[in-house]
Length: 495
Ligand code: NAD
Image 1 (cartoon, rainbow, N blue to C red):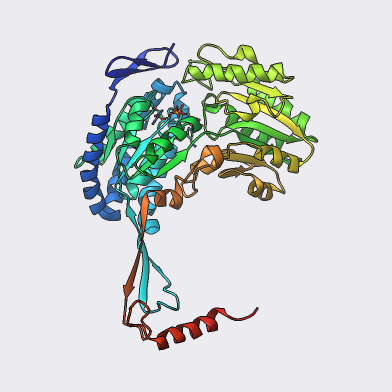
Image 2: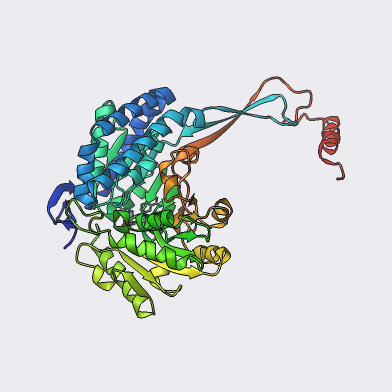
């Protein structure tokens, strides 16, 4: 079984629950990618020329098209990833909200700002502008084929760039739908284009001379992207995987924490970059918490029918990774309280809850990307923070604590943290999204996300000729002496 079937110049995307062909798409060559980028260059000039208001109006129009036809898009997402319709709708709703926010706020965030000119250049009017970069390449994953790339696409467009998008080879139909719906709302120029294919098509986009490459995917591919972009010094943004931890303090609401751990770890069959994979629980509430998790997880079922809460594993190769992690954990003293090795089928993985798993095992250290959780007991929250932070990744984290939530959140080494909720940051458009370490760098969403796709431009405009002109060979010794005196007066005081 493969979810992508190769032919010569085209490939099929398949429904991972049934192997039915969902659509056939071209494997775009280096030349195809170069042509798309060249068309995008022209479109970018027109798009930038519309200004914030013109772009905002068109992006709001696009948002309307997506909203009115969301059920149709959800059907494509469901067919290509296997995820339940309701989950497909959820990621579309979030993407719509982000698009609306980016369109509405771009002018405020990226518009011209005055800056104080300082003492030595008091005759200047200082300002900063955030100009479009030009053409942005976006390479996306399959797990949230709408929400994830839209975090780059909507923000790059709102900042005034044209976009060339290479969706995952598992979800080309979702990419096609997004690009076609944009063309419906903005028919004038190809401001948002699609290229399809495998890694090679993505690599061609990296080398195509785009002004920035926004990548979301695995850390291993992220490294290849950086290497390819290095050839042309193309700046990159990397949104990669994680091994996110959830901490449960002694005073946490255990019902809510258990519910969050199971949903955070198992929704989308665990194929969530910011999904919960590890849980650290204060020893005084460990038994109660584990009992609640076991009960909730025991009621979750993976399947292809409408009643199943989670769908198939989209990428067949991932089944072996999940099986290896569970097997290794069990071989090294871990116990499966729900699921286990038998939970891994040839399409679906049933929820699996593991305890007593050594901290140095693959199930704790590597991204599993399946509906599994490891739960470990800790003596106190210092130990919980230490263990959570002992990871090469640093994408997101979660804390359940009544009194110490904010303190613990600050101490967690991750780009984002939810306190007494799970993955909440992703649904707040004003909050930046991104990781540290092998989870990547750069930020999408929020004002930081808009600025990722803009070139910071500083302008100093002389308002009047200053009595002391510093930037001339005609500067007198008297001017230098006066400046020296002035600087001593301003900064030379002993404290
Ligand atoms: P992947 O790295 O296999 O593929 C991502 C994209 O890169 C695909 O479009 C693929 O065709 C392309 N690609 C592959 N090789 C390439 C190359 N050499 N040059 C250029 N492009 C290339 O990842 P995936 O399996 O699609 O997605 C799952 C991974 O994505 C997980 O690790 C997950 O945690 C991560 N992810 C991260 C975020 C985030 O925002 N941080 C969001 C979603 C998914």
